[in-house]
Length: 402
Ligand SMILES: O=P(O)(O)OC[C@@]1(O)O[C@H](CO)[C@@H](O)[C@@H]1O
Image 1 (cartoon, rainbow, N blue to C red):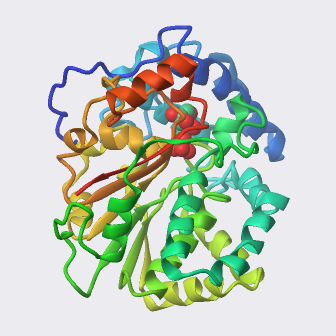
Image 2: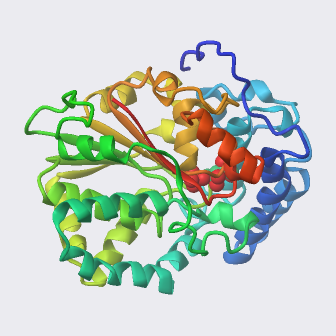
């Protein structure tokens, strides 16, 4: 079991306040997701019964972990047995829910549905949308722009690709499709520092990057499949193709999680999609995979209900050996800074100081946690919107810790 995180003054986010965002996730989003999963795949009576049971007793009753699944012991979550789901840390409650959902559909087997991703129908549909096609069409004109401009556009494409994961759309219908990226401001913007780290130049402050010349490794901790993973892969392709990194390691989920989180199968689907669309990037990514310049990692901790501060030694060593780790998305952000109600002006660099090496967060704001705002930004947001900016998915940030 990992070490317990150091005590901190900021309270852990829970779901027990009925007016809170986390409560709505457990009370509304999870039941909606069970129904969607039930409708999307012709599961047999056994799996349907288990899904109905989860719907009936799921988050409304107390936590009842199965005796024969050691995931609950590995991450020390069996200690929550008999407690209301709403009393758990939000991160743990969600993680336990996804574990129960996968068990209900027989994902862990044995049986005919072993390894069948209940979210795959939604993920594949994502790749088939007119919006996804338009994004690929835009690659042509982009390739004629100067390289620094391309990199900046691909970086922001990867950021805004996180705008609306499939789970998010269950609750805020349509929010993910509206063109909010252009009109929204970044609430924190370390783009210049990140570009320096990505290209190996010295930082705008004049300080040299930690990266040495040559032999550079990028870790990209992916978030969602489909329309987020495609721009992530395009960014990785650009960085490898133009010599900014020699190797990239893509961290993925070992099995389906938080609806649309990317797995190995989703990554292969995305690369296949890029190849079928006859993009040069697709061909290059395919080759990079076969040559080992792009490698895939599926560490079990990626589906653990814990913050990165508790990561095991082997994962820590992975990140420590990278010249830069890029964390994509809201869930990774929650795990990176700790899923706590920090005062919004708490420095990002302080809460991530434990991280072994330079790390960047690219995230649209879809949950309460936030760090690294200036007092001015915070008060402007609150004056304009109260607290809705925290969870609406219309704001974003780029933050860097060197
Ligand atoms: O990591 P992602 O895909 O950007 O976001 C995951 C997410 O939708 O899931 C949680 C609610 O289920 C929220 O915290 C968050 O907005």
